[in-house]
Length: 496
Image 1 (cartoon, rainbow, N blue to C red):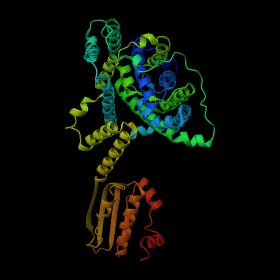
Image 2 (image 1 turned 90 degrees about the vertical axis):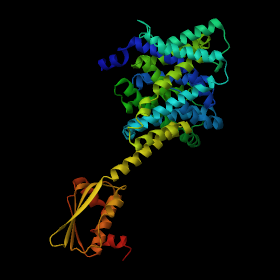
Image 3 (image 1 turned 135 degrees about the vertical axis):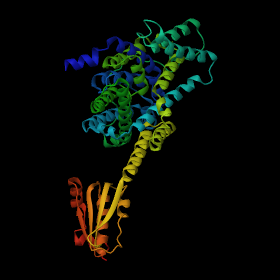
Image 4 (image 1 turned 90 degrees about the horizontal axis):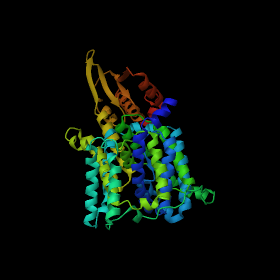
């Protein structure tokens, strides 16, 4: 226990602290922007980001991952805020947290094992593209100063690590933000700053119970939104946790992360914040800046609140060009460039799943939809591939009055038709033996097909014997097969 606490909290104090500072500075404009998307006051997103980051630092299952208000969640809130107002959003946030805690106890995070690597790669690439696209408004219709500042920021980010002694000690994104802010304040050039994004709060958050009637009508209003928020939030959090696992070569407790996200959202709702989830962009910034433990997430959340409440005058001077440079670095670092090189080496089905996930996610800006399409395609390709691994051979036995069929492979809904068409029902033999010792029956569709095969042979006056069923296959066949039940056979054949 003590060793785990030391590892999670105090094994990388310097790196976690510096990384948390970078993340806190980058969180401010995003939290404001997401609040605007949702149609609420900027303080709602800022309070939510503070609360979620602090709570998830203690309750989350993935050390070093950053959670806060996100764009994916904000998009789902627009209609609720417009039709019913902020109080209903806070109530929906509380219910979202409850649903996520329930999902954690039901161990729904274990479903992540059904998400293939090609889907994760597509998800990562889509997010990298979306992060880059989100920076384009800051680079459109602006003066040359913005382009110069952004280019200078990228130069600092990529070149500063090569500076002797201090290059590897101080995160280059932090240096970028500090230097460009100093340049802006000295030169006084006319470019957008964090202060132009919206008014920063000047008070600490307070406990706030949603002012909504506690009735079934209220529940039916917020339930659909809470379900969507819970699903999208957990999906993005689980995918981000998987990516951070890969970046740090460390495991994480995904079911604990589900519960942690739920607790964090309940806390956010009670402090006047909107629902949030893990942020892949900020998590990558954290890892790339040297953050590995829970301390980095805690520092990011606490410093965010200190910056916007007590140091708002300084924070408002940060040029957006500096943060754009940081986010472009994130998008470049997040994108899996190897997936482009591997297009020629990987199977076509893998490439289709990856590209479809990217296309749907970028086209709809809906992460859940992109992952759903990717998982669905991956499942279809897998079923088709396994369904084709089926061989049925036959040989004569005796004096031409006995045929033995040997089945090798998996029999289920995707291969059942092929299984049923492999037998010659018109051949005149007295007995047919179907050897299933190297086959496996998976579902009711396979059992029903076996029924039809046996019944067709018996209708032609042929004796049928099934041999070699393994225990699992025999269990499902004994339970659902009807070929030895005359009444059921009569019903199946329509009375003929």
